[in-house]
Image (tube, rainbow, N blue to C red; front, side):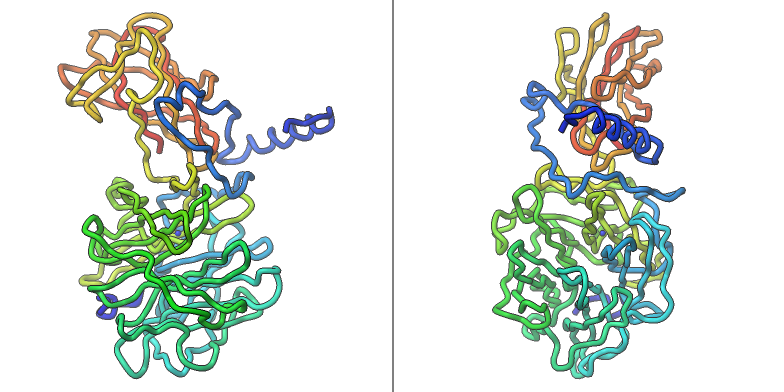
Length: 485
């Protein structure tokens, strides 16, 4: 039985002068917006021989406008809004969450993914179906009509009246704000032999075939399943297939699936662990076929540790796509009340793709200096106390330069943390260039013995791969890593 039952209910170039002028005006306007990026070349072929990369697969190219105070590590809904998912309809965004004290399905709206989000009055779900009882209506999934007008379909988890399990129901509405009216009859999905089902998630193939993903709810056998649906999305249209299970590299269990196709592969996001513990996390797996086999990534996409504690227990992630690209909508723990009872708020972060590898803004990404492109006066140095056991240097004469390809999930201003040592006994400075353009001077203060330290400098990066270069101005030192935040 899911422990959540014991507590409160629960991501060209222009060919004419006119075209060039228009492009220039657009670029100047974009540069005034938060997160605007400088143009610059990507990594060279020589750099890719040291750091193999694939071209990023972007879902969009326009830069989203973010409201004042937004941060990918701060909740956009600072209060109970667990298991969130969001869609865009027209010029407005709609988010849906697990039941709280005010609604069976709370709804919030915003003018942009980053907010500001406003909770809608009332309830997004008109009523529960006859087989369900109130109290555990979790993890809603709303699917807009393919044509842009018509019926919106809602999938939700709810507790059965006649036994202690949860099942998945379906409801419809003519408006994204609801109210959604349940489809009469038995649950859409309810595998009693697997302890029921929760966490529904929709996937539609390029040919229009609909599928539903869900988690089987028996703790010992919890897994992610995929089942085909009818063309209207209201009925099961074939047998379910188990596509992902839990293994020893993950805490407790797997749940909260979300499936997309990026970089020519199927990418399955899922959560692992108990939602009320700090080790709850978002992970992912990829496959070349819809039904798998799925290959799990070795490390979490999101975790408390990856965020350095800035977000606790990030999970239940859902991908929101619009003309600006992809955004990860997820929840994090805001407050512990004891046991399995926690408050979870909604977060939104830009999501980028290096092929089929997802990269989330807000999770610091470290790039070891020794994996960059070196030259004759910058060499790899074995340094056991350094990150990765090595550093580069000594930057002891003019012309010494290091080029490091770094990946940014979205265009914008980033904080670049540089780890270094300076045991020369005097001042030292490096010039930081971004995609070939000098951007800032970075001082290396003197360090002692085996000590390493770090400093930060801001840089505006393009979405995807960028080249950060460090060149000697004066003095000498050693560089350990560059970390993008």
